[in-house]
Image (cartoon, rainbow, N blue to C red; front, side, top):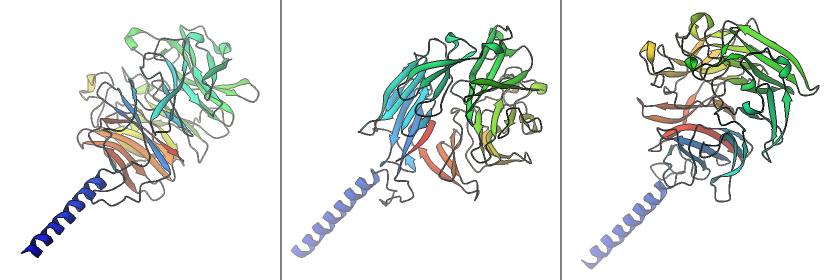
Length: 422
């Protein structure tokens, strides 16, 4: 009898230890539900996650040893921000539009401290009190931004390390005397030591909300040679209007393989005229003019609608195409809410213009971040109410294999995602 009781005690102790070990393992984000270490998680990467609530506020998190395929952000350190719409990374530095309170206009610099928390590291204020600061970080010492108060046809320069303004480039010679004139307000791209900047000439009225009504219905890109420090060209294209959308909603992409530059136009998102519809345009490598032989028309895939995401890689364009006609203005004339689960990620062949829907959850446009390429894979963000998915998918453009990178669990929406390599 004593031996039987002793055996039961030993077995109970072993079971308890196993239970405690299992609980400990399941609390470790690097382990799966069976307590096994997920060896597919990259150990030399830090994942930067921007999550958001219904009012767009949220946190910026840095996950390194606590990465998993299902992430609950509860209890993890983070930087609280009023507007959590993602940002960009350069090496181990992060940048986003406006300060953490979203009350000060400008460019915010962030980094990761010794404890692994995202922290503020500097701020470059805009003189404007409007939500207008477009920017580009080209290197640790080379940055550009647009500040309406300093002059619509002047592009400001800054040092992304010190976060100090260093000067400006004057484009006043491009003025045509319109009420609203700007350079680089929505597009600031760099290729081969040249800047490619959207040129807006028109008017902004209350009836068109945030949009600029160009006095000539066309789009224009000014090309500035950083070597000669001269305006090299202004290239224009008709049949569409409004290059880009908002300052933190980037709609240009440089194909790292071909060297071609792509730009998305949204047309007039309020009236959605078919004759001036949303398009994706191209300036080929080595050129300073729009490629007149190329244009992707949104109305070839769905209409009315707009291209609202853009990434190019190896002659393929990645964007979302809605499954139904949509209107940004309250669902309005088409009876479809713009932020329903109607946006599907597609791969469009730049040569054939054929669109192929990728095997990913639909998106409801609560995140505006574009896809990006990393270690042979292209990463896509999606939020889907119907599927209960909020997370990141990855796609191999060579093998055409799609897999889930991670999903958030009880942690709001995914609003932005960056990968920092050790």
